[in-house]
Length: 162
Image 1: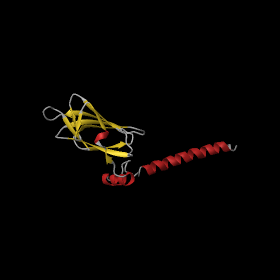
Image 2: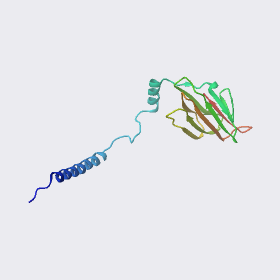
Image 3: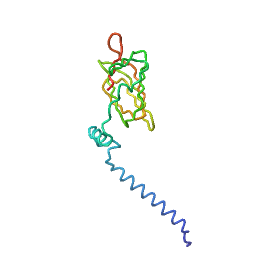
């Protein structure tokens, strides 16, 4: 009987090793007790860690806001239902700032937020009725507001920015 070539033996052993590793991986994977990619930290713990590493972000100054298509007075933006309001948040020497968007008096708005610089992760909130805090990088950002549910006479959406 002829002996198999050494390369054939190595190939057969490699196939058996791959099959064994696959079976082992499937067996261990069936017992996965991970959180499925979800963080085990609470929101308060994440905020505390963020503040410890980055510091508490300062609020955006009213002078840093440039409004187009709406009125800004005393930190309150008045958005008419027919127009989109665009707020340009200018650059700053501060690494990170925060702007809190809070619809007033039962009004609701759609919010689109696009930070400047790279990497930038845009955010959007539809039918926002509660306060939402957004992080503004050093490079600034663009905040767009659209009135979804106006209140009052004349009908408009009032949004407080802090």
